[in-house]
Amino acid sequence: MKIHILTLFPEMFAGPFSCSILKRAVDEGAAEIRIHNLRDWAAGRHRITDDSPFGGGVGMVLKPEPVYRAVEELRENTGCRVILFSPQGKVFRQETAQELAREKGLILICGRYEGVDERIRALADRQVSIGDYVLTGGEIPAMVVVDAVVRLLPGVLGGGEAATTDDSFAAGLLEGPHYTKPRSFRGLSVPEVLLAGNHAAVRRWRRKESLRCTLRSRPELLLVAPLGREDLELLAEIEKEEGPRPAFVSAAE
Ligand code: ADE
Image (cartoon, rainbow, N blue to C red; front, top):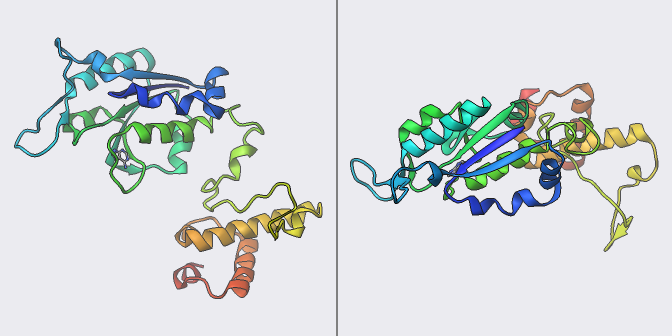
């Protein structure tokens, strides 16, 4: 997958793509990530990319012309989907990452300043927010999206598709706990079931802990997660162990 990132601060991207899994994905050719400085498409000697808002107000607004020129040039060459980062966009979810991972290429536009000229929105196939808070720009959202998408590309994580099927959110639930050596650490022991080698018991325990974790931290996910008969039994066991679950979860069953 080819990913173009349009930003006024290319230097912000030096770190995240140059280590660990993302670096390997790039080195091995699963992803090609190109960071472009929007200023390269700005006109005039001063290469101005922002201006004051019509109608008055504080802050500066990203001008449309350099963004249009950049996207038109890159899109013509690649046929990529265009994404604009903005707090007004749809909230990014694991499902969004899965959809984007199927694209041939992406052009990611990082907004800055107080906002972007409204006409830039017309360029975008989607507007994406990474959550209900306001950041200083779209650079960190771009890093978040690239990380979430690239790890889903074929061959990036060892273990094939199975490596991501148990991810939190992939099946509508949070992932449960993991343990490694030592068996006992500061008085905290690894659950016996994980040491006994009974695969069916381990699978059931993992499902139960995934349900428990979801119930504790994100009970609203249980309202829409595809739950089977075993899940309802496990939730009943958890309820016995921990007391009643929130009324709205029981009501949805
Ligand atoms: N730009 C500023 N805040 C943002 C957010 N929460 N998501 C995406 N882009 C943003």
